[in-house]
Length: 605
Image 1 (cartoon, rainbow, N blue to C red):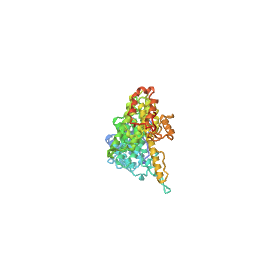
Image 2 (image 1 turned 30 degrees about the vertical axis):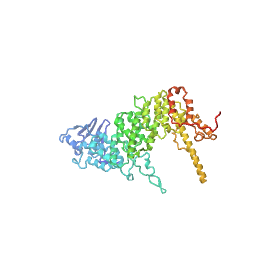
Image 3 (image 1 turned 180 degrees about the vertical axis):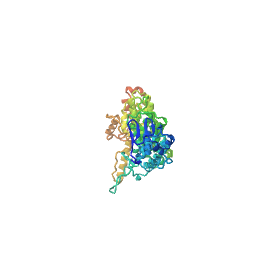
Image 4 (image 1 turned 90 degrees about the vertical axis):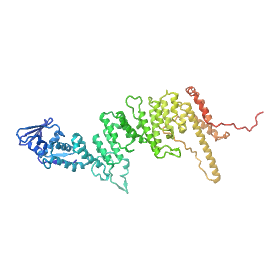
């Protein structure tokens, strides 16, 4: 820390312990200065020689003791004592902690050059410009002390000089940083490769581009806002470094923000959250989506206002593909019946879809009348939303309409595999056993049975919670897929045999099927499904029976399997009455009519 000593005379100020300051000299004091409860017994001549304000208050004639009351001097008794000691020529030590108070008090007492050359104001200004403002940490300390001396410190440009000094140092190239700084954090991910060895020689540790972040966390929110705004205006610091600084400051001032318990603060905390939200860089990716969601959770609980909420929703919507399911579990405010704020997440998803559509239009989403496939980020968001739906489905107070609205916010085309939405629907039905038939049908309409993985189909076929219509659809599409795969295998074998006989080369005819991938952690029953029984029966008879019906060997018609399903499921008490209309699906399926093969034997006469 930089400091400056003024004067050469010994310090003879005495404190008697009762807020009384006396200068020990041979001369009797002839002036008493009162600052609140503190009294200073001083002499006229030293004060008149340096302070123009005392020249106006103290009469030049008369030997009587003068009593002066001062109520509004900045810095109070401590700052006045520094000025008084300077008038006596006593040793005074100025540093980053007291220089602002001394400068404001000197201005109040009018200790300028018109009164005496080399007066206190001049000496302090030289110390500030030549030492304090050139020091990184001293500038931060001084800025922290200016708030206690407003508006004097602002009128004297001390605040603006500190801000300019800090912002300019934070904006310099890291290769020119030669001063000390505090850094106990991890480097940004983009800088992890800078300290690696090169040609066997270890390079000197490089200065991280966010080296300045930690030192600024000691500032109050108003000073911090001014510094960050100045840094952003200069435009020399990367946006991710600015975002990292705001994140570090938030966790320093609001440590409970990252905890599940969340914060419960007063108006100051509410104002701080609003300010932090306004300071966030507008560029996408400057702060993590997880941090934005934590801010949204806090501002929602503390009711920081609609504008703050909309701003965060807009920012989160731009990078929702980075979020995790746990990040989205924002609790509702007091008075709500549901555990999680589904409406909030719905607004975020709608914002993301809206921005994704704009980006798609910019990149010519429709070419030759065909809609372009969903982006990788949209597919990721769909998976996250399905995972979120699975979690909120466990809440018995989650309304079915909110569940459906959120599921429909993501188009079915954005889900190449519908295992995730199936799992969410199944969980909702499990936790809401009193669902009506119509609500169950609405839920099942959210998924496409043709996009379920074989594992999910096997689970759905034996799922007693699903309507019979859905089970039949799942089984039909699964059987159709299996028949198509068998046909492909038969064709590949024929082609392989032809190529082998033609060239004599051996062709690898592995049994591969490019099917959809199952979602992780999909719970499957250990019992053998009816579909598996059908497949095992086909395999056992496929080698001995010929394909007299025109189908591929081992293939079973969907009607036979559906007949088994109806005989085992449609007769249950739960579905025989409620799903009687579902049996019409058999008539609605486009099965090819089969004609019995003609018999070559003569009929019995």
